[in-house]
Image 1 (cartoon, rainbow, N blue to C red):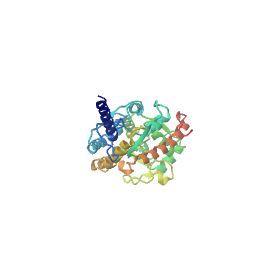
Image 2: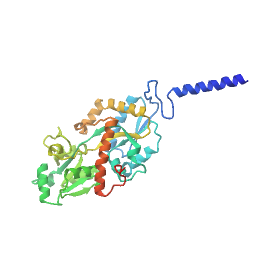
Image 3: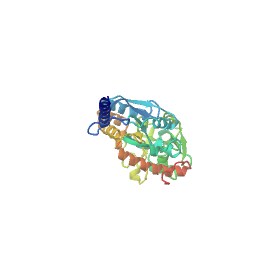
Image 4: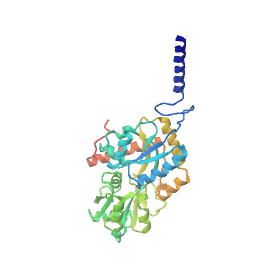
Length: 339
């Protein structure tokens, strides 16, 4: 009897050792070479609604990743609170390599204002950056007619007519506002926040708004129709689409903020899973379908894809920039630079 019991215990121990060496655990599965093995559906949370710019970015990438990874990659839209509801949802999910999120600068701004329950900067890490648009200050053709057609003329007109020129943006405390103030620092203008891009576009096309700041992807149609005039882009060089428009780089203005979107995950997610998804995204961005998406949205004017390390460097840089901006606005709650 004792011999049988001993043999049974030995068999159980052998099975436990084999299971421990297989790479299967609560953290996921890796093969003999240490590579992550995708075993079930991957969820990417989009913290904004269906049909918006963020949603339009992650859905084609999710389709490409589904083919690449061999498992379903689904998009879950959890909107509300300027993207914070989606962050809170992801934070409550296991960091097991199967839940990710689309992140942008707006989440940095929310973090600095203390809106998420957690310290977003310390609890989330990037996997890869997907797109990086170029912000443009554009003028209403109706409102600008006979007054200004380029950046130099705009500056001259604004200084001669203080507090008369209105500038629209989607958030007075967002990245657009920070970029605007970097570009037009000290100029006497009126800032007008709008609830939606469609509302702001209608206002500027109708001549009820003088200027607007937005991403290139949002206003290509208005530029093509002639309703707005591109004045200056926040980029190191001129855009190939609009070669006559000046850029902040040539004007010596230190203003380059543009909307970027990146896949993020909770800190503690297995590094093998992060590396595997980063590598898959790096291959997917070369796909003709993705390249066509970049061209259609004018995302091909600035390098979109970036590795996890390069994206983290960008995030760290923008935390410094936006911290100073929030201090000036009296809105800073979390100061990561104070430690």
